[in-house]
Length: 196
Image 1 (cartoon, rainbow, N blue to C red):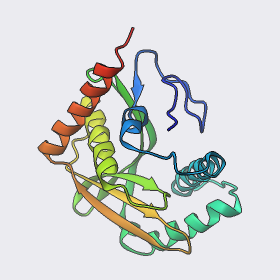
Image 2: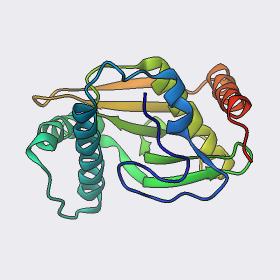
Image 3: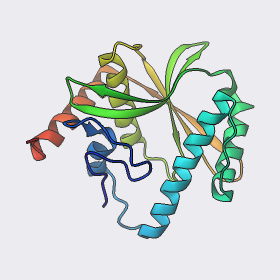
Image 4: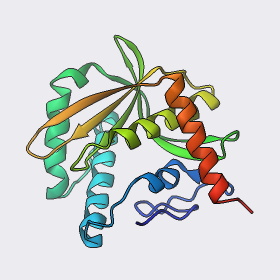
């Protein structure tokens, strides 16, 4: 299992503030990618980063060149825009947030305004759904938003982009039980990884 170092991201080399831990680093303890060839995993990470950039560029009405591997997922994104995701109005895109209280950081893919209210959105290009980890991630992102007094959100959606133009929009209610679980995951991480 590989994890990001606390200060840089493998995909973008983005430097984060000292003393903060990425949500993805905390969640790494609950995911096992050891069965996947490291080269395949690295290529998949590059494609995922390309897809995130292309979606951000779409909403900003900017041009973004993408590889043929990412094009399949962008076809799914276009299908989602023509479906239930088409009414989502982005308020935040690819925004890094920090929680002083939790000493964590994460990059919010999208905070959108919908007919039902504000919704936290994350894009996934993984082959399989991992609802337990994704739910925990969305709860941690919801806490980041709340700690930054941006918006309180009660629901998250995962836009799971698949090959051949297919997608699913998975709803995750951000309940108090899920928030408690997110707090516990952060505490467990720092228990086993004390900061110097």
